[in-house]
Length: 222
Length: 237
Image 1 (cartoon, one colour):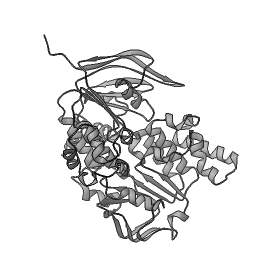
Image 2 (tube, chains in turn purple, cyan; image 1 turned 120 degrees about the vertical axis):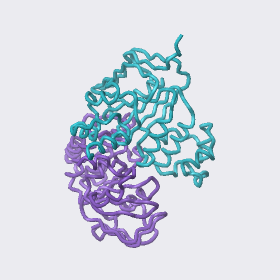
Image 3 (tube, one colour; image 1 turned 90 degrees about the vertical axis):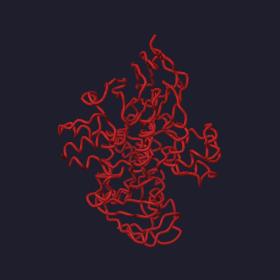
Image 4 (cartoon, helix red, strand yellow; image 1 turned 30 degrees about the vertical axis):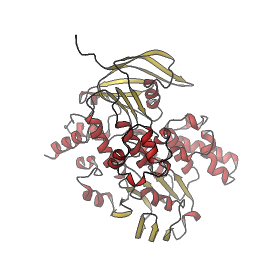
């Protein structure tokens, strides 16, 4: 379980929260604390007070994959292969294992044709696909994705959704503004003004959002 | 003598890079146009070429009655020149206080634009872009990073434009403005799908919701949220 107790950081305050294994999607307006929360989950930020633990361990002691909402802020290396290989190289994984893992991951993301390209030449969506591959290549226990889908088309998203579900990650914590994607979650959190105002399954949460821009129109065609 | 028509005509323009290529032909008349396509298909490349910021390797572009052009890049951070939010606004020559009040960023006036959330930065950028009228307005992924409410507001703002050509390059599937023509990039070629709702039948990137509504016998008139909701209501009776 991911547990938060009396968690405070900047404008975010959560008294108590439990997240079970599975896909948890965070929705809500810009500036409501979604990015702040996922940064705490990823260990990029440390709470001002309170605790956030992943299976009783701090995020910084957990195997994590992270994708930033700014595509360019994910990239460290010049070419795509080196970027995806970097988490494995930092762990001193044997070279032949790195090669096979990078190729398998690129294949799953549909970006094998990009492996030799320079990252700076890629489109915005391609950069996100590379970042996702780099986040997944070391098979993390937790995958934290901040609006990873805001530069991707429906076909790439379908492929990635499959990649995420078969990644082996126990927990996927993701922010999105695509309510069609949010439907396919085990658990939804709606953030507003630094607080979680709704939490539960999509079937529970979405009826409360009827009449707002966050209510998926496709919900009416089920 | 009729009133001169504003338009941009692409005559077989090409972009080629290694194994990748893009070819585009077609006439964009006054109104709102949607260009869809997969990741890496060349939407941004086409936008840059239409703005004449990227050379093309063949063909030509004709512009009629177009004197002002604006390209909004998909990454708002690439537009930044001001050290503060107020400076950034001023650099666009727009009414700073009015703009910041309208987008709820007055309190962050003195903050660095790079300290804003990505959604806030996109909101700031689009407010500056849309504060002026352009004959040709090219919006590359304008909906990325915006929350659902802001996407709805942006659609309304685009819908209010009564003059000029507005071309939206996007993969957004759900919250879109009413458009006059739909285009898509397929296998390296720009394809004119036509006018909605007829365009839906041969639009390979048709959003799943529209596809579902058509399968249920309730084809929406256009692609805006209101059109989709109306089509859903028809099913529900």
